[in-house]
Image 1 (cartoon, rainbow, N blue to C red):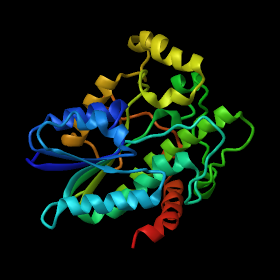
Image 2 (cartoon, rainbow, N blue to C red):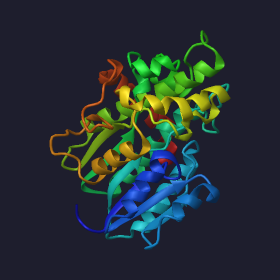
Image 3 (cartoon, one colour):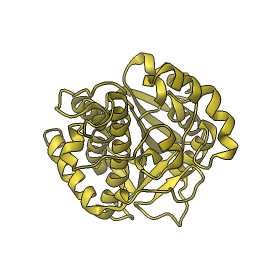
Image 4 (spheres, helix red, strand yellow):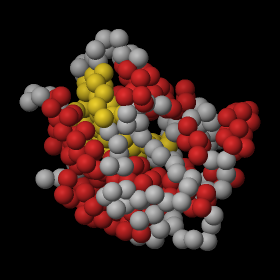
Length: 310
């Protein structure tokens, strides 16, 4: 890896993202540019930087105007003679309440987990170095056959079509809480579809695209909107089963694998691959391999973000 590499990252203020940021900032020659929804969220992240190799700008991925502003700030930081080496789309949100719509007219989980990252990638691609990398954090919850996810009420992604997904339409047969996790799982399918679609559009010699499944990581904040009993089980009981459950990882393990993927992806990985925390191929649903869904998602996402791409 060349020195003075520039890494742009979302979701670096907590969970696996904070640990990844810590590991990246400890590497010589890495300059990290990160987004944070508020100065309070950035406190722990800013505390990691002792060498002036971190810049944090405001970023709310559910607000496309904020995403466009963050992209503009990143471009100003780059100057005229530098390009981005790595773009890490890691931020994730799981809402277990009645669906919430953003001012852009899309459901908030979809906006945060997919559409904001889609817009950010499109705006920054002209400023990506040749041979650069985009990594998106997905999840096994998109797969209806993932055993551990199903035990926690996930039924996999509900992808009727991209327009329905953008409106948070997952049907009404399940409870409000279950619909919330269905929207999360569907947004994670979108992460994989986006990576695969972009890999078809952009030559790998120009930019490579990879999706990453960190596995289930008890102790992160994703369960914060679940009922208290679920939060307690996730925090204290589930970690006891980690040695016996294939799809369960830890922040330490998953962050180590993700940093390795960011900084030096194995030569055998192809643009568009979906990789898990073990470093091998991640299990995926049939829908994740559906290029028609990927094309639909791309076109709808372009339509939804078009006014910010000028």
